[in-house]
Image (cartoon, rainbow, N blue to C red; front, side, top):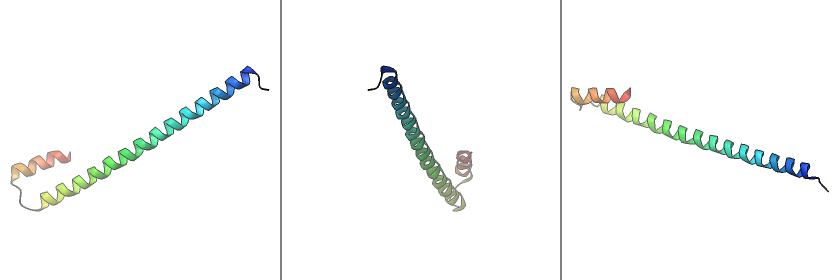
Length: 70
């Protein structure tokens, strides 16, 4: 039979490991979300470049697009 200290130690270790797993899952989710945002940014920049190169924009609109790229 385990004594109280061993039981408390095991509970602490289990709680600690649960916290580590939760933190790890949160980091993974953040990385995935950040990657999705970056992918959308890349797609947007590609679309802006196509629009800019289309020759259909007046200079004012083209300048506004250039500001968006910054």
